[in-house]
Image (cartoon, rainbow, N blue to C red; front, top):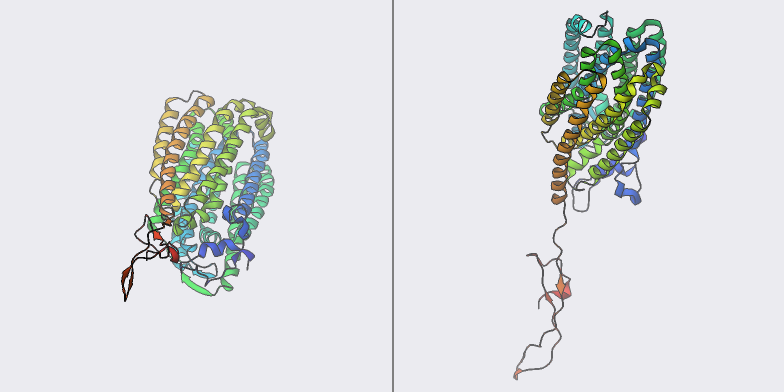
Length: 491
């Protein structure tokens, strides 16, 4: 079993309340670093793997774009924008299932046969739908072949098949296992992409994506099976349909928002112009995926914080600060050297994309922070997924109204992204303030010592007045006097 899966299933706090989330973090950080809440250790392993995966994706696009050229690379970017929909579906399941898994000890063996049956039906429906829609996508995106669509379907099937093991492993904080699988997949995708793109062009590049995702799913399934054999407690893993639906609506809005400009640019611009836009969008996504990875890595901890209601919004505040700093730094770096970025990633043939990159760096950074805020709201089961859909509609209207060049198209995502960021920050800010108030400490009683005149000493010889010991009176803002020391009680 992975070393990060150990836990003390019977531990409780002195008051008797459950401390499952503390048990999960205990093996990650020493007590002296408890203020950080484990954010910079366990989740950082997954973040590093996700970052490496993104670098491998950029390497894939850098090499493949040189093989395909601007015209065919525009088609690849448009198709890969569609592939993001499938991980979004998996992410919706992950959000709901992780909330279920984190509430139980890490040694639990989850029986997910019911969920797997539903996923099998979904994969079958996806295959039928993809084959039926193949000719339409081929015509709309000018692919000249249905094979890229079939590779897209294979990729989607592999992603959905890995939904349950990825949810269980992340919910049990098996970060190292997930990180190793991500690193191996990223390396395999890069190696296969270069070879297959050279041999089979666009279809080969998409086939590399599908095969790498299949390998990732296989690694997760094997790791989950090994952990199940060593588990001590069995429990049915039920599918919370309302939570899945809410997460899917939210994630789908972010997917459409992040990819619709590429999709529309491919449709509205000439082939070469769309290639420039897709290249700039991919380079600008550096400012998007870094915050995405932070949010994905921290979600189990945000869910812990929301369910325990014992830490206020400390982890959210830490994550928000990290996300904002990384997004701002990435956007600033891209805006300072757009020409160098485009030339290094795609070559001198994509030089005109540098002016588009300056704008898309801003919009991608804004969307990256929005994604973290959306994760925070989903962890608290807030129904705010409808808000990004308003931005989706505004982006579509703006691009259809103004699309004379790649640069003109890029203006709309900038305006919409900043407006959405302000709105979502206001929602999460109010939610964090409410969480802080729920965990605010109770009023502390204060005790004041008062010297009083001695009382009459009732003796058998009669009432005589003599000095007595000074008295101490307790005053408190609470109705209870339990906070006062014994010697301060009223005589």
